[in-house]
Length: 405
Image (cartoon, rainbow, N blue to C red; front, side):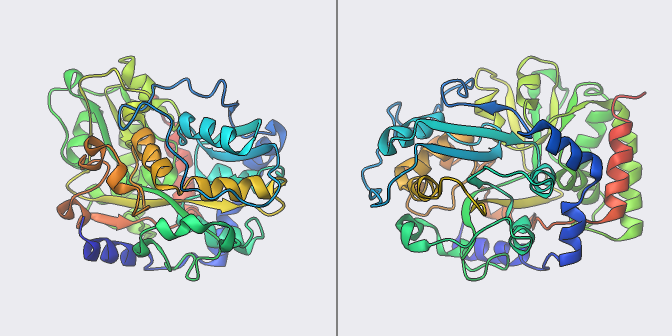
């Protein structure tokens, strides 16, 4: 992907700031969600590194643990623990093991959330004890404003120099004070070709398959912003639309497909596809190797009628109990060899310029992961629209009709 195209795409992503009002609505998604987060305590599955790798190992790159020699050892006393709140199966187990060995960390707690809304609800409910998490970029300004994220001491993260400059100085953190680019990717269509009469090329194709051959065998990720991409782009609108009439048209489409869906599932939809329970999904590329490594007929499509581009980030949470271990991780993970292993494992594109030459060529040349210039033209930057009450109401109605014929 040419630098000028990436620059233009990132500029589109920053087209409109998330208002304070929008964040307050997003962060207060409902007393029920907040209460649930407060009661559960962890907000998701908790896995230690010894049990977390219930996933297939990466097929790309070396089978050996990544070299971390270029990462300078900090002069600070590293705590023995690190508490991470993140998306499921988003970090290579090899890198977790290498980090623990290098820095003497014996407790690496990895709790997961399904979407940014759950992350925000957890923090709003008063959750403490986590060190770092990975919100999508457009959510960071509001998290900073609400005091959930602390400013970074960049002198302790020399490997920030490895990040491509086109990912720096963007609207959500113009002075690069609070976030570190982690991965970027798209929202698209996953499929099992042997279970379908044809491979979808667009959201329109997807729509017909969901109501026909893939009825009862389609999964959507449980992420409101991503779900709305499908009907809005299919109808020719912005994926970030908050126009009343456009959203009503999207509502009609979502309610039309809801009875045909198997489930909303952000964490194990790849497993459902691998088992043959699902033949089609609205989701992301990460599950292709992590949960579908043995599936021969799998595929991922960037829809021709357009989709969104997202950027996930690293942030250091306010009151992090293990700040030195956190800084050690934030620097370690941007080591080129370590970051290349991340892309090989989670199948998302790295913003680390020095890591790209080390990424498995099969991953680097996979246009589902690193979009082509032509695909870039159909991408729209993801914005935070989660505070729009009409969207919230439509999404709740949509969820209540899942699987109901």
